[in-house]
Length: 332
Image (cartoon, rainbow, N blue to C red; front, side, top):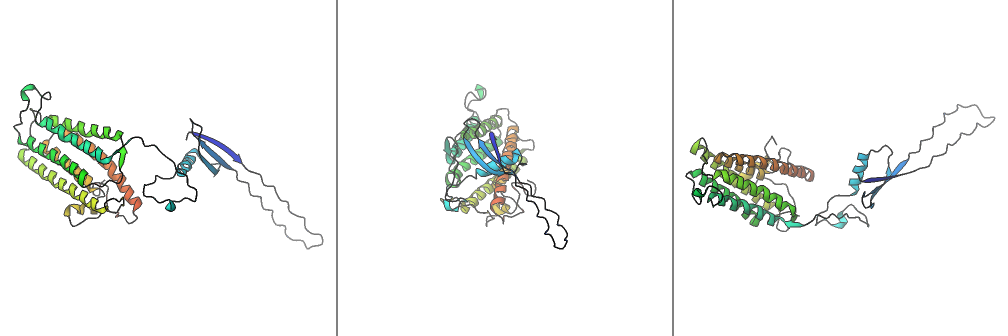
């Protein structure tokens, strides 16, 4: 709260006296006089901008025992909620006079552009390390190939993952918001590109050693990776079919005939569940510490997104299935 200007107004009510009993009348029990109600003094609170002294809000009839925290809550309630582009004026809780608050979100960029940029980077960066272009490793290793087949398998899985993401961005995803702040592209690209370079450096390093349990571990990891990639794609298709082209309507996602979507019975955001499983498989396949760290950081971020989406589902749909968890069935 930047600044509060308080004004109090009120009048004390006068006490009314009781009349004397009429002479000659029969004595009667005198009724106890009622105590006059104490006048309640309300405050009028004017909220100003600390720098410009511009009036932001005027609160009428604020109780004298209201705390500053309660006044802050009253102020935020007067600001209303964010409006969507498709909201109709006559359906909003306003009269014939409506007050709108404008917020400058700064430079914007489309979601498609951000996704294409942040996913193309890891695809190209990883291949630079895989082909061992000059100035990455020692000169004698320039354009050499690894003798371990798991290195080649990891390159195919990594490339497949990001090619899938690029194609989904172009042909599958339907975005509810057209743009995001321009600064997000720098943050997202730093995350994806930086981790891709870190992982690729060690996986494609000439001194890289294969997983400790050999082919059995690699094959198990490959099965987990491919299973979760198919599951993730299936969820994206199911979510796409919930929203007709050109609309922003939201519906409760339910399982379809595709068995990979049956996880909707237990999880609100199974696309994140499958994404986590894919990177767990890639971690098991490469047995590389940077990959494990990337998986952990991604899991934390996806958990935050899943919890937020789960809360919005519960708030928007009263009949939302209560058995579902945000990302991990019965746990998280």
